[in-house]
Image (cartoon, rainbow, N blue to C red; front, top):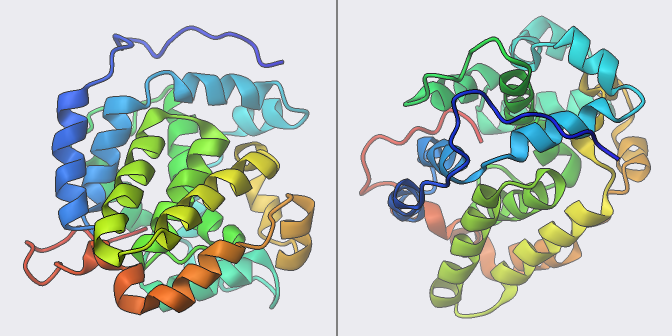
Length: 264
């Protein structure tokens, strides 16, 4: 059972629904505007970072991981390190992810700083929040959810809600699923999002993993050990919806302002 820790210093414990609704409107009009994701997280994820940090400390390796406070973004941005992983490993799959999407860990860091004065403060909770942020693309790799499509992002958002809590994740996933009914004219998108939540509930708690060690693990073995089942409905939705409908949230990117598409 995780310990109970005090709240993040200076926080009120209140959710900012006005900011959340403003941000979700912008995000649904331009799914590449990652800045809005972080606005929603800061507005609604009250208490989830404290909960996650306490849970980490309660795991066998959590104390060591918390004491070391590894800077994952720094490691993931080291191309020489990323290039060192053997074929078939999680690290090699992450390398392929970077090459195919053009995303970068340091790009995600920069987006997360927009409008956030507490992004880089020295505090255990802040470190855990950054760690969760920096694991996002690794979770894409492990779960098989594509990062450059609306469907994959929405499914991973639901997976993340099941894994780390935080109402912001649920808010984004639900909004994307609800909009999909009118856009795709069927329930497959929403069912794939629901499947993401179920996969997250069934899987081992990924936030407690030693991510740097995990990178050397064969990806098939890692998925099996972590309880990551096959995303059956997601793959069916990809096939049946097609590329345009699977990425419907990005369909208006040409009409939008220059998007903040630096990372997933």
